[in-house]
Image (cartoon, helix red, strand yellow):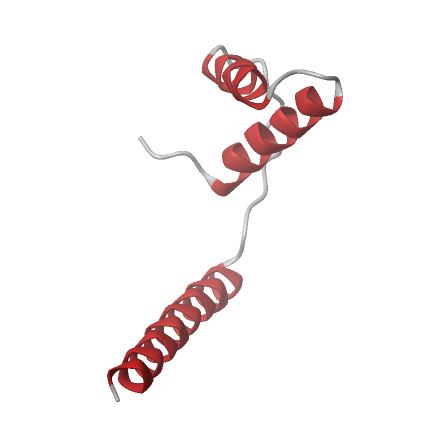
Length: 80
């Protein structure tokens, strides 16, 4: 099962916290993922209404389309 955005955020925050405490990056990541696996991380619950979720999905689609267009334009420019 894929992790939610909130779970990824909590893992990232814990990793950054461990790095700030002096742990090497890979060890900090391992600690954060172990804490996630063992359900030791506090993961905030946020619920979005349908409109907000739809707006977020549309924004992702627009960003993806824009990125594809920019890559196409760059490839076209380089092929000249």
